Length: 366
Ligand code: NAD
Picture 1 (cartoon, rainbow, N blue to C red):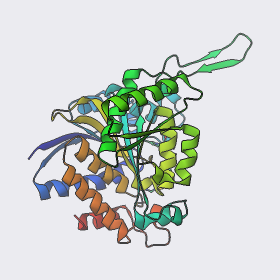
Picture 2: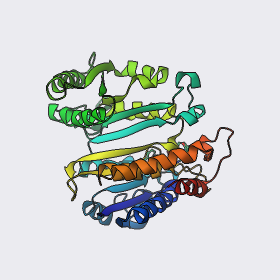
Picture 3: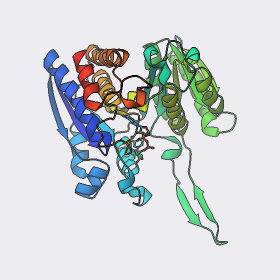
Picture 4: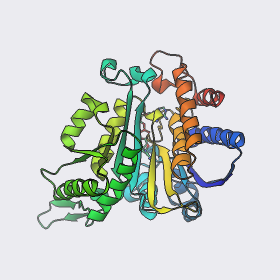
């Protein structure tokens, strides 16, 4: 059995609380299935600033470079909000990690169990079987990384800011490969979302998607949708999508909208896969909850640990090839919430329990 070597970066506020629970689950499945864990916990985000003067300390980055995957919590919060934008935890830790490891493919399952449809803001009759879709977001290109990115004071006293949206065909093809693989593992349906009626990058995006899928994946049913319509369709009828793929900023917005219709941020996780392979020949990746550090509930012992636990499952699936173990954890989470064990963010009148009791219920199903 392999040894799983990964870096653990819990981050700030509820980050360490839910990470402790995720490691409890992972320690148990490792004992049950006979594989060994080789992980080191390191500071990142506000914790990095406080203890090392930097959101992404050099020692943390080195640890990640030596690992096969990164299990990430979440970073940021009011304590560091007064810092200059470039030094703030998210911008100074998460974006450099994405860039450093070329984590170009963000895979976000949008999953709402049938048993939890009452947690969604959508009417239950619109989603009688819950929601089960996947958002694939390009993560290292587009408006967030394109240069120039400047703010200039003009001679007439006005100010001018520029962000640049850039895509190369090769970057689009790279994210399409991830989307095609994901579609192949599901219903073989892929919707590509762009704004090709207005943006040059989107014209290239749409043309590349059409040509690439026709040539490389004729078994995939490809459709296209403008992003404004997609935003509407996601709330009208989310399950019309099975897998959708889109560029960085559109994906940022649509994935949060998807999280909202899925009811609870505390239930959603994501995988960001890199261009490089780890020592096992599998994709190096960063795995994290979809939500942030939830400062409003930190320290109260009520944060939902499910998203962090489900990000462990994604790590096992993508970076360690342990599909059966991943599925076992996902099924234990489902059993726990379906049997009525719910934290406050998904309780909706049902008995709500704290972080540890939620994990205990998951562990009892393993
Ligand atoms: P948030 O996701 O932290 O919280 C939004 C709401 O969802 C809050 O009411 C919170 O209590 C709730 N929530 C989130 N996760 C939950 C969980 N596991 N269990 C129960 N409830 C949960 O978003 P925010 O308030 O906009 O941001 C707080 C901080 O987190 C900010 O500093 C932001 O920059 C940071 N952030 C970090 C990441 C990341 O590290 N990837 C992502 C988003 C936000």
